[in-house]
Length: 112
Image 1 (cartoon, helix red, strand yellow):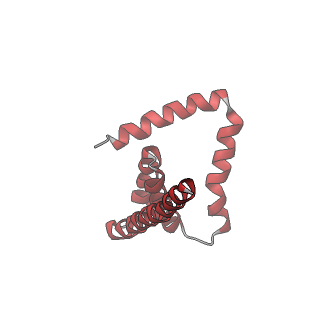
Image 2 (image 1 turned 90 degrees about the vertical axis):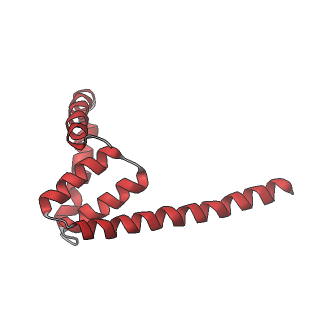
């Protein structure tokens, strides 16, 4: 398993370097990151649960580290996280089924 605290530290260090090279990119990402909080349609815990599910489906260890840390700060329960991860698992399964139909279509088309 990863050292999640070290992962956060390491990613932060590299992002600081990236910010020096392309500051507008990081400012834009920060603007996007804060946009949801301004609408207040979802609470912070729900946003973090969504972020964790998306982090799993996109296989982003940095995202998992940062959003897990934020979820812990917000008091998100293990059961809430497990439910969100169940949604991520379901979506990955669903995506595999849908893309399996693409393979069947491609093979069928290429045989014709």
